[in-house]
Length: 306
Image (cartoon, rainbow, N blue to C red; front, side, top):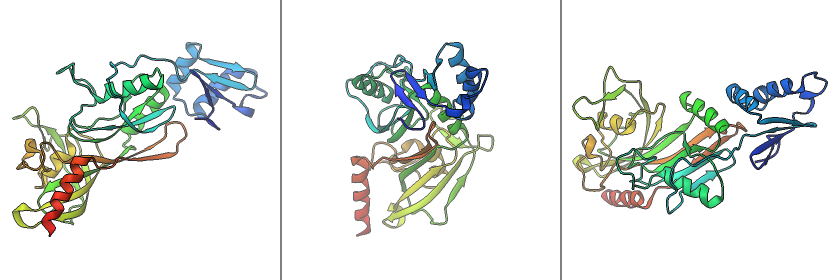
């Protein structure tokens, strides 16, 4: 990435502050202020870079070591991840259903998305730590956002905490969803009777899901619906819990009351990921097409209309 946000030269980003440093007695002090206020590098990172000798002045140019080589942190998989978007700061990878975002200690032999992203970095000859910004359930497919350096991670973590990273999902659910169902605002907490489940609970954390009905298949007890869901919060199993609470468990989601039979896991896919680029400020919107198994499910359900 180059232009007004600088030119990458290996581990270093070369910037031209211009008049910001002219006529100042302490050019480095002025450079540190410019990096924070104008370039947008978080204050604590600027201080760490300065203390580590990773900010240098060379004439009218400013060089900042924002791309230091790092260990992946995960053993690279045999096959790299499918990449939906990438630049010097961010990466969005497709996570297939049945793959965990990162190892959880249960099965060290299992390949996770973290291992697949590490394989992508390996194959590209890039030494960057694998840093995910958000997660998806093991059996939910869709895009996962990664930061490729500390600058991006700090900014994206901040955006995630401020609910500024948009995530839109497609879900196939049991029953005919009422078109009047637009928002589910119900707190979510742990299910005391089943450690694998979450539940709507007055004492839980705030959780808001926006619902748009796209299609209804069939009638009566055998009806199903396709809905588009947008998260305002990101609680564990939020969509699964909220749709079950609304009387429409996701097809295949037997943990939350689905009948089962049409799919071996919840019919849920992340369709769109939208975020403000941590450096340029531009809005990045990444789509992820439905995987073949959900295309097939949708076609099978569509036959109920005929």
